[in-house]
Image: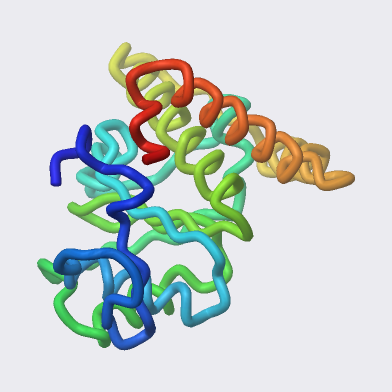
Length: 195
């Protein structure tokens, strides 16, 4: 399918062996092995993308999201880095290796590949992948100036992240963000997604 053809009704529901329970079509083995291993850890939502700015970070020898902007701070100590690219993920062992490296982090940057985000809900995973891309974009734009980066201290970054998480703040914001995105889809040409 092309992205413009994807609708809620043509998504596939799989069991843990890869058998299609709902929907029609063939599964993508690489997606299955990546997602399955992380879902097996009890994660509700797993998003894996090749967004341009976050993926660009994955192409750097020293791939690291720097704590250079307030959007980056939500990811303080939440990113695992897999510095080994083994090609397509075509078996359970490679998916399990990625899940093991990810550990209890919300984000995995996979060298020469892309990003994986795990969330307690679709809203939280979407919110993280959205702000991860924005954070990577800000970092790359700042680095493109060739000037020295101003990095926020670990203490301030941790305090910022903790403040955001108080009283379920990040989860609440994620739900609001997700609801707004869905309302936007319903108003525009994306409304076909609901079919």
